[in-house]
Length: 101
Image 1: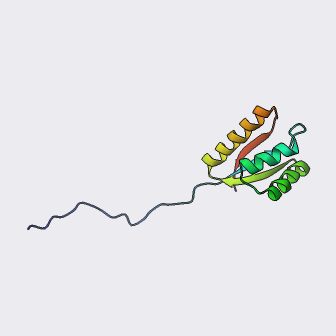
Image 2: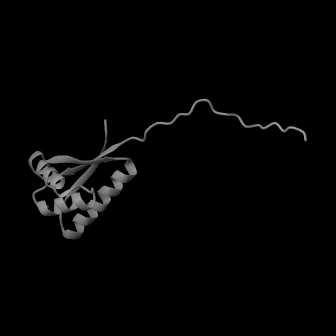
Image 3: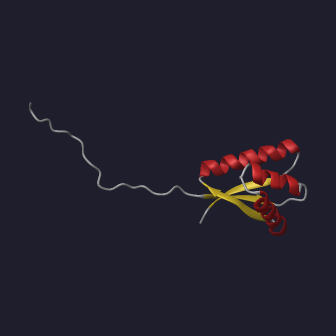
């Protein structure tokens, strides 16, 4: 049997890097109830009751706080879900996405 030569070249250098991370920031307002914010933090961001309460109070006192850090698609998806929930209940809750430094 004759031996066949392959034309496959191996790459020596791969250019793999971690995807960029984005912060989901929840902003305080005078109309959204604290209970609703806690529910969003639990249902959308999967925080425990204690962590959700603590973050809600941080938002209340500091006017904003980071709800989580995710890849871009996940961050935007969580913002959309939380915003949709808020609008369905008549709340003006605002969440934004910022690139992590």
